[in-house]
Image (cartoon, rainbow, N blue to C red; front, side, top):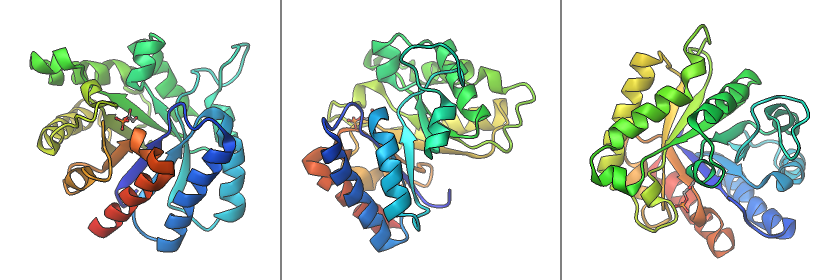
Length: 263
Ligand code: 13P
């Protein structure tokens, strides 16, 4: 992971595969044309993963900086779990990354830190790279408790990785996504994000002895503010939600162009 990383989290959009195909091809064609630039990861809804993986393999097989990610997974590799998708299934589809512990899943599905810890371990066990999301809500930020909240999340979410896990080798992405910045248009000041990234880096280094990791920022990132984040050496990339599919995917191409210029 040499360059900056740009992740598109499409969330529950678009409504049809026809549209998904258009967004996906536009971004992959751009990456193919430039052949340098950021590492791009697209995380579509589960139902689009397989057909998009086929498009990636047949039309864009020469691209090694364009990857597929999933937005979630289950914590077991197989078994009778109605409605669930295992990390093993994702791996077999050609997916390389999995978002774990997104705040929307913590909020709407009551995903606890314990569930997230199990999912994170299952993703690493099968050889995929987890994108762990952490971040405080507005009241925690206002009370100045944000560092403490993120520290607790990391300690609880990474707890299965402490004993003999061999994390020197495993790759991990942590995305700092303050909840108050998600989908609100109010983004975190890049200086504050850098401060949090330094804090997270220390915890990963000192407490968990993890060396191979990247730290991203997420929360209302778009083509107008991305520059301020990518210019920070402490910020390895961004996790983009709404702007990754805005204007029929055009804003995402603008984001990629800006990232290229900064490299
Ligand atoms: P927005 O970019 O829409 O604020 O979403 C951020 C996010 O949740 C990415 O995972």
